[in-house]
Amino acid sequence: MNKPVEPIMLNAPSSKSMSHRAVLAAGLAKGVSRLRNVLESDDLKHTRLCLQALGVEFSVSGQELLVKGIGGKICSGAEKVVRLDVGESGTTCRLLAGIVAAGQGEFEISGRGRMHQRPISSLDKALGPLGVDFFYTGQDGCPPVKIISRGLTGGEIGICLDESSQYLSGVLLGATMAQGPMTINVTGQKIVSWPYVNLTLQIMEEFGSLVRIQVLEHGSWQDVDKDMVTRVEPGRIRFIVHPGTLTARSYQVEGDFSNGSYLLAAGAIGDRPVLVQGLDWDSLQGDKRILGILLEMGAGVEKKDKGILVQKQELRGVDLDMGSCPDLVPTVAVLASLASDSSRITNVAHLKIKESDRLNGVYQEIVRTGCRCRLLDDGLEIDPVPIEPGKRIEFATYDDHRMAMGLSLYELAGVQVILDNPGCVNKSFPGFWDEWEKIRQGQIGLK
Image (cartoon, rainbow, N blue to C red; front, side, top):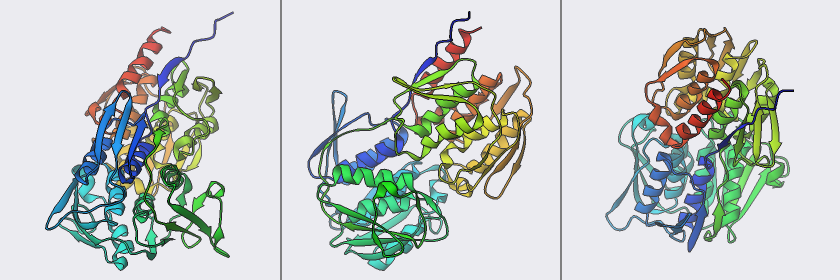
């Protein structure tokens, strides 16, 4: 009888979404917060540098990041502009813009790469009626942008989330510093996934003993339990933030399902199972949906004491609306190109305004394998074709971390993968190649 193959033990990185939110909340809080397991990446480096420019102090004690917050008081000072370099981090840009709009003074947000082509005008339209001015010095509606504010008085606003739910998260955090209660209505056409908004509310509750947040649904506009909400539908949900100073606390960041998806997917296509440690089976993260997608495609997925186990079985095609989890598209598209039949991915038009035009990028790269793929206005149709073993393929990453990590999965299908910029993974998962080497060595051990 053959002995069961031992799984490859991998470590999920810290959650990027939760690290951003925890560091920002601690930076706004009064007192010193002690944060554990904060992701160290290029994006988080820029979030910390921006907070330092606003007066937040950071230090390290053992395995803890100590954050001395500014007690909800953001001020640029007389005749001074605070310059905030967000690098290529869209999360830093959108969350921070909502936060500094609640401050006093002038704040200039700029970045690099495609950041100066990524829109931010939804915040301008939402906060302009409250007296917050946005002045664009490059492409209209995009950074670089100077934000001039005299603080938020409170009141009622509407915000469109058609491009990103992060606009709402930024305004929710900023509203804690308003002079009076703020009612935030969701406008636009797009129904937004609830999990990322809920992560922000979760952090605000963790640090917000003096802040009260109401979630109300259309009808009688009565309070609802946020944990019973499943989506943010324009015109049918609103938020009321009763401001107060956030309070310092100790907090541990959980593992990241977005970046963990590449490790989980490796178990679905490699010859040896993987066990990914550090992921919470009960997490509120939207990208936890990768577990359901893997199961739907036919992979073996199990909850274990030490983590989540994924093992290879024949993959089948799927028809998926991925509007709630667009960061998973590169992972799922690669899996779909290796499945037994066709797949369809829809409702991800917003991938066009990520670090790269990620929708077109995924299309351009997976067809290099011989896969037949059709680019839709809002997604992809993928018809798999068997890949010639040992085929050498040079892939473009578009300097996009998710493209690099997703395309690396082809190595487990026998492709000699050559990436033009493997280092771009440092944006969100600097330790990716260390974990990937464990996968390589684990596969070699079977031969």
